[in-house]
Image 1: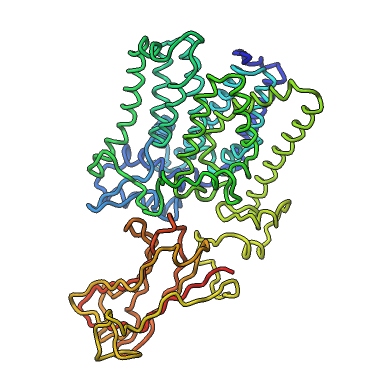
Image 2: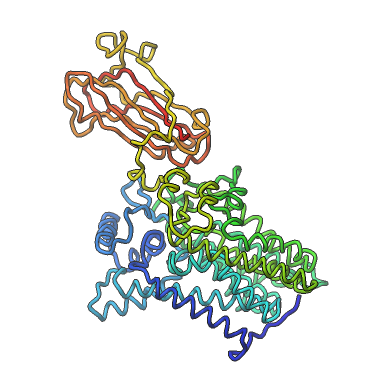
Length: 611
């Protein structure tokens, strides 16, 4: 590969283009300046700092502090960023890597707030601005080192083109301006990967101790930010050696430096381990809490991650499909460099697509793969340079293809911004029905999109014309489950809760045996006879799913409002969640939480399947 370590001078048109890109990013961030930078996921990343350096008290005091902050600054609708523990304490949901990176700017803001009239609470205006400026700083550093990496392998003009393509031809720009304002973890990780590759290049060139120290610090912070990013170690460990060098002998020669590198990573990673030990009593702790979300290594959603219309990387960031094809050229031109980059690409894609929520909530394209675009730039550059060496006709066709891809990305970004493309409910039918549109069509959204599980209260279930109804299960307890023959609504028997009874598991079945649709509305009704008015712990009709016996999306209907001394009806309408696996089981049960006698009869479970 061609090597060109010198960046263009400030007077060079190529350098001017890059400076304009940096200015454009800054201006866009100012234009889209958020009302609250420290909100939602960023709120979760950042919490470590005020809870460590401002709040000095018990877990109850920390919890009350966070509730007060939310009521003052509207950081989040709920405290989903924490995971309650059985002992009354809580653990922060996200790991602490981003908080470490926020820290220098947090302390600057802390000093400013201390000497001004702003509240010294970690969330007032100086802290907001500090997080915004600090995150923007990391973004600009990432662009700078992205260009340095490109210049290491390619000509100046091609290097600038690659930076332009990454910024404007992918979802990078949107997630660094309109969405998240650089403060989300994938933006930090993008910059971190530019540093990892650059420092790896420099260490294999000079083997300087300070270089591998910097590399160890960056790798440690990356893993501390997202533990699955441990795959970043593949880059320095598999990086190509000189023609006549053997990896085992090379590593043996510099074993002291590699030991320091390893100890730095362990030391930085131990920050999280110590936190978990102090808060949860164990060094390793799964802090997401929701059983519906997690890594499923045996069932990765790789094809969906790449090709689905819901959130396919190659659908909404087609430039990355071109970059993936570039691995073929990279293999032919530079096999030693192909090995670490392609190995990283495969394993990182496997980990990203193994997350149960593979669409990564509301976002444009695959935000979890934004850091990988640093690696993808190299095969993309190899392919472009290979094409540029071809005859004029091929160059023209490929250039037109690149223009079309970048234009499509910009247009789809505009569609997302204007609400035409939803963040997590896209379907193939809706994609083609709205292709080219710049205004959302409410009717198409209603009929062609996936159900809106984020705002179920806005789903109008009164319009059942879109669903077909059938009875899934029905019983009047005439079988062995029925235990009372003195009182019934129909037939001769009912089920009576006695003082010893606490649960009646009335129905349980895997989702795959109920339907093959992506969602259902399930209506559960039962006849109930109460002998006394219930106290503050009423009997509940509960509906839920479970993954490996761990319950999620638990919803209740209380029997407390029902009258006493007569048969009446309890009803619950339940929208199924995004099931983690098709074997997750839907359960209907009654939870008896008092000593009153209660009779249950005529349980009916109806399902409404989308047509």
